[in-house]
Length: 282
Image (cartoon, rainbow, N blue to C red; front, side, top):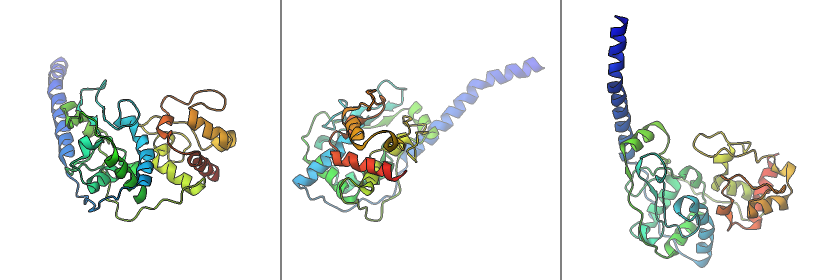
């Protein structure tokens, strides 16, 4: 009898696995197709040379995902390449080739709240970071994207496979955020701890280095080292130099997951502000 029941159980395993996979896939597809009621801001960005320049500085930090070359222009890249068969998932081309039909309000909502113009959640979009962008900096990003040269081809639309849907059901890959309903104002630019706190909040530092910057623990981000101790070990100029060159004061390169090149358009005063914030936390 034991052998009989054991054999029956083993025979049922494929059916159980198929049923579980089907359920997870259906949950995943339901999440993918869910729409979010975040209102689209009724807003048109006024473009100025100053805004475009500022927007370029911030947009450069997006190149790690939105450019196959890791640099501007933001022509898109294939997120699914080399990974599991999740379907067709691109960080989209953000030149006017792709954004021509988007309103400024739809771009603002996508960046800050992670919601596509269709109302569905974007996937693997760090809107949880970019919701910290000030209203002025967000307008600067839009102004830059509008001003950039159109670069063909456009990236294909997202099309998630059954495997991708199962992953969406199991992991927090969708990144839609609640609506931002209050003005967001940054401190005045300058080498101050206040402005450094703002820069660190929009630069993704907490995702890799942890909520207290004492070392990363996130399952879906590179585990960065403790950077809260930097002011005890490096001078301000050594920190600036490390962020400029990707090399620590002792001559050892920063870790391969540290995207220091993404911040190449930050000014030395921006890095000094970050250092001042780390120093003020001690």
